[in-house]
Structure formats: structure tokens, C-alpha cells
Image (spheres, rainbow, N blue to C red):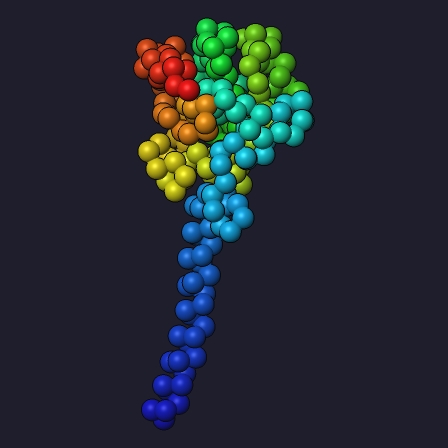
Length: 204
């Protein structure tokens, strides 16, 4: 009887342990940054993205430039920040600065439109001329690899963490290093942002 119970206990343990390991692996994989060959994290500049014109590219196309990566939305209380994002872009464009806009519908269905509708909205209402990309997910199980990289503490130890809302901003240096992060309430022309951009532009 004792032997039978012992064997039963081993059998149950043998079933439970792999299941626990499977759930743990799944959870770890969800939080892990995108990995390249050999499991090493890829560079931010290697991550594939697609423009609103459905052209496939990577952020490597902007190597050597200072970037401000922003998750944007058309029906958000922070949507008027498009105007300041455009102004910031125009102010520093000739020195090698770009704003990159990534529409996302993760928060309160505030970006429900098609890519075509987003292009038209930005052009007509805010005169946006900086690069815009196709709508992606910036959080959750379908999070785009770009935002997995930006938010992971493994690849972005100083400025990682969940996207809190629309118009979070990541400042990226010419070499692809993430230099700073600003929340939704920090406007693009806030002196802190302007100063950080100028400092980044001064670096080789």
C-alpha cells in the first residue's frame, strides 16, 4: 500500500513539474526581448518595421540619426502632441533628428482607423511629415518586437517598463542606444525633451 502511494505521488509530481515548467517558460518568453542567432538580443536597429505606405524596412535605415520613437493615437487626449512632435522634428531635422510615429490601438480603442485613415488624419490636422509606420500593438501578448525591445529590462535596463499610455517617447542615439524616456504627459517641446535631443545630437 505504501509502495503504491509512493509510486502515485511520483507519478503526480512527474505530471505537475513539467506543467509548471511549461507555464514558467511561457511567462518568461512573453517578457523576453526579441532574440537573434544563438538567443542573443538583436540590436534595436535590426528590428523589422513597416511604414504606413506598407514598405518593409528596419530601424537600421535611420542609423546615424537621433530618433524619438513615439506610440501615437488619433483619439487620445494627448493627440494634440502631434503638433509639437512636428515642430520638434522641423527644429532639429537638419542636424540629423527624426521623429518616428507608431500608431497603436492598445488604450481605450483610441486608434481604430486604418493605415490610410491615420495618414490622412495626421496630414490634414497636424501637417505631419515625419515618418509614420503601420499600426502595431505596443503591449500585451501581440506586442510588436520593437516595443518588446524598448520595454524589456534585459535590452533597456535604464528605461524599460510597460507602456503606460499613448505618446510614450523613447530617445535613441545615433548608434541605436536608448538614451532617455519621457511619459505621455511630457510634451515634445518640454525643455527636458529639447535638452535631451540637443545633447544626443552633440554626440558623434
